[in-house]
Image 1 (cartoon, rainbow, N blue to C red):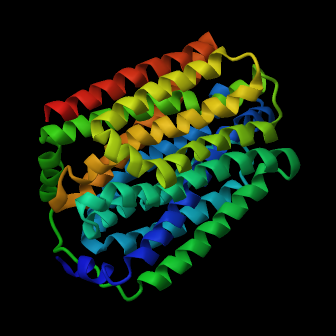
Image 2: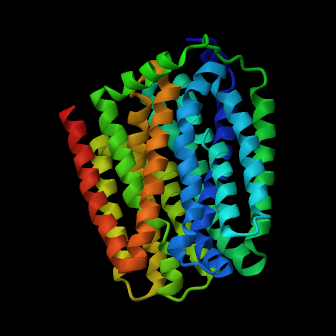
Length: 395
């Protein structure tokens, strides 16, 4: 056990809880844009597909920044890098509140995404360092409760603020939350001595990435998480616009409906995860997650009554975390000796897949409408979950 691990075992609960709080703010600052797409489109006089660049820019920066954060986390310590990156995220999201046009907003969201990028993957790598594999899925699920609640808060608060106070004030609130959590995390981890690896040349760093990418289990996990993000978020980012334009809901009701995604996730992480682990195992959880995603997307596009939409969105939350949490646990084992880099690769595939899915989803929706894109995403996610479950059986 290295110095970081020894120190972290002294008070891991408080540090992990604060990392969960950081993931809460990160998720809220990302997912708030889903609810606000109709308002961005109206204010800047563009289509919802064009306005989706606000989501895409955050996700692209998030994904590309992983190339840097993995080695930085291994070199300077994961917690230290997270603390500094959260300051960058706060600056970017505070600046977003004053954006005069869509291009400026997209650029500042790029900065926010680059800062927020360090939080979740390096937190999961840190948990992988200090928690045994047998307890890791349950601990990661609890850590993800912060991310899930942040998703729900971002979506519900986004709708309420858009209807009553405006989105600019909401961005300032998120910037303040980033700084508050960052200060608490700095104080909680100030006594933890983190490992400092020797400096290495660029060629050596590239070889470390290539060593992970050559491993067959890593290839399966990375390809699956990229496809999962592409399909899921290529539909999910536009549910708010779908409920606005096809079902004629106001933004407050849209936000509350999208917040049910978080309720489904909390149901998984706080209540059902241990039950699923005992009853289904990893393979069963991946397969069930894909099937539940398909059923929920199809329900969403086939319903005539908007009152049923919250149940469909809650099903999306439960199905997503059934599949995604299993992928995360496998991701922590892609390269235990280089977990910072491995989880950065995982997060990079997740958010680059998300960015590509939202970009192409916006084009598809502008051309074909909502139902084919949302329903098609659900069917393909079912196939993906079953395929990943099959790969675990073979291994």
